[in-house]
Every structure is written in C-alpha cells, then in structure tokens.
Length: 146
Image (cartoon, rainbow, N blue to C red):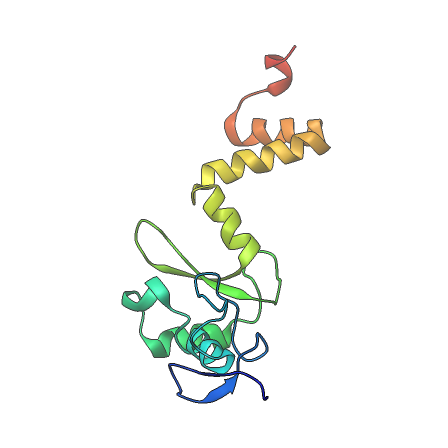
C-alpha cells in the first residue's frame, strides 16, 4: 500500500499528502492546504500585495521590493513588508515586520512615538530626558517635579 496522494487544486499536480508538500491548514479536514507548497509560495511572492493592489502597479511594487535591502528604521534585512499610511493609503516604504507592527501599535502617531521615546529615555537617563523635553517644549521637568 503506497502513500496517500493529494492533488493540488491550483497546479493540478498530484503529490504525497504530507506537510512536506502541502502547508498546514487548521480549517481543512485533513489538516492540509488545498494548494501545494510550491503554488502557495509562488502565489504569496508573486502578488505579496493584498490591500496594496490599488496603491501602486505591479511593476512599482516589484521595483520597491527588489530595490530595498533593509528596514528603513532599524536596518534588519529579513522578511521586509510593505508599509503604508492607513489614512492616505500611500506606500511609505519597506520595513521589517517588527518595526511595521510597532508603528501600528502606536497608531502611526508620531507624537505617541515621541512620548514613548521620552519615556524610554527617562528610564535610562533622567537628566538627558529632562534636557530634551526642555529644549523641545520649554517645560522644565525638574521644576515640575520639585
């Protein structure tokens, strides 16, 4: 009795019914995706677009992906994603997943990010944080907390 085979619904190729050939899928009775790994991977890399379809052409997206080698914020080079403004839907660039999610957690608000920066700075060096706030806001933290 041979291996059980499964036919990919995209390429119609018959392959062994294992997670080596078909990605896991928790909604399927057999626990495997209906597309083989090759089809799923090529589909994801080909389009890698999702909601960006109306924001830029395929050629522009391919150029952005091929011309960006590192995260614009931290310099990470693995698993870059397309970052966009949620209000204007304009593409801003390529970021690593952590930086992209970080911006999202701060609701893409530069002021919140600045407050977070000050918070972190204050926990490391209170004088440097106070000096920064005084220069940028005129507020003397040492007078406020004395």
